[in-house]
Length: 215
Image (cartoon, rainbow, N blue to C red; front, side, top):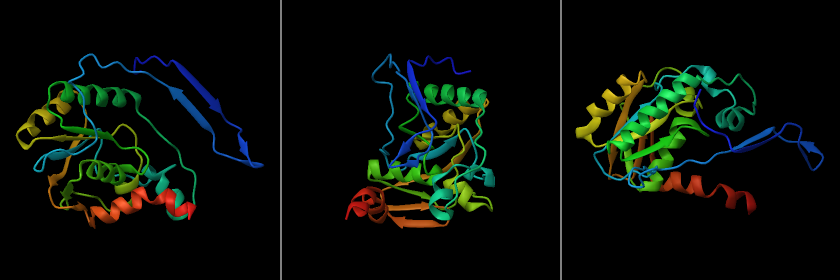
């Protein structure tokens, strides 16, 4: 479906450590080639005033988005649910994102994976040392699923305000969902729906997890 060669891999379904079972650990090794080194994006936010979009999905998520998520495990001690992926959509999303990067439309990009949308956005803010104002983002009634659900095939794209229509055109031409989230700010705050936190507090939580476990 993706036309992507897999060069190596390993699947260990019945691991044990210290006499106790651990999670199955499928690992795939892959290698990509960037034909033009100038056509790339990092996750770091770069310019106040740029706009953030979610490509490949919508902010409102069903409860099923929490299946297998870090949120479900950490907040409720649950591990389970049915994981789903739409491979044709995944391919369309990647084509659209690559087109935006190659055209120089995108200034930053980051996938939504562990921790979901909220964590991905926090990582972008911390990397670029800039805030975001997404306080008006239209979240639905299932807030936890929208913020922390780990639905696949979703990538955050940041563009200058005067290029937003081109990004929307690229997404529409590729038959890919797209939704506006918010605007990058110099204010050192993370505002997303009802969430409003200083970046310093988020950085301490993000970078201090391992040290806190070792002390």
